[in-house]
Length: 237
Image (cartoon, rainbow, N blue to C red):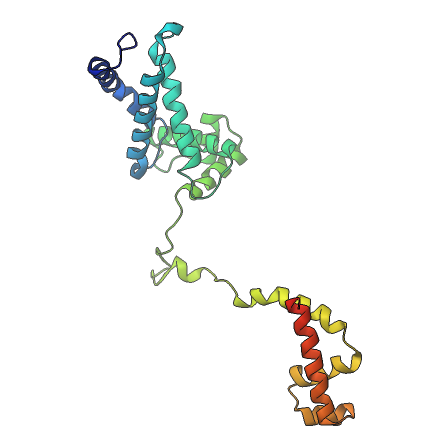
C-alpha cells in the first residue's frame, strides 16, 4: 500500500488492510470491560484507531505493523473513555484504576464470584490499595449515573427527582440584602428607627409619628428620603 501511488489500487489495499485487522481492534476494545450498552461505541472507537494506524504507518521505519497499530488503537480508546464516557469529571489517575478494577471484577465473575468479589479480592488481583479500590468502585457511579425518573422507595412510589432539592429563589436576594444592610447603617438613627417601625413592625405612618414624636407628614418625607438614598445605593445611581 505504501508503495502504491494514490488511486484505486491504493484504496483497495487500504480497505483490505483495515478489514484484515478489524478482529484485532475489536479484541482490544473488549479489554476495557465496558457495560454492554457502550460496547458498540468502544468497538467503533477502536476501528477508528485502526484506520488511523493504517493511514499513518510507515514501513520504512522497520517496525511491524501491529507494534504500531496496537498502541494507536489503545490510545484512541483511552482518550475516548477519559473524555466522553464519564458524566462527572473523574481524575485520570482514578479512571485508570477504575479500568483495572472493572477487569478484575470480570475475572472474578468468571471464577465464580457472581458479585464481582470483595474489595480485598480486587486488591489481591490488581495490587491497588484498598482505599483506591473503593474510590474506583464509587467512581463507577459517575460513569453510570441513576436516572432522575427511576422509581425509588419500598413501594416505588416516587422518583429520584422528587427527592432532589431545587434552587431557593430567595438566594437571589442575598446580595441585595447584604448591600441594603450596609446602606441602612449609614442612615441617621431616627431614619433607621422609622424604617424599622414602618417596614418591619408594619405600623402606619400615624403610629410611627406618635412614637417618634413628629408629624405624619414629616414621617412621610423622611421615608421618601430614606428610600431614595437606599435606591441610589443599590442601583448605583
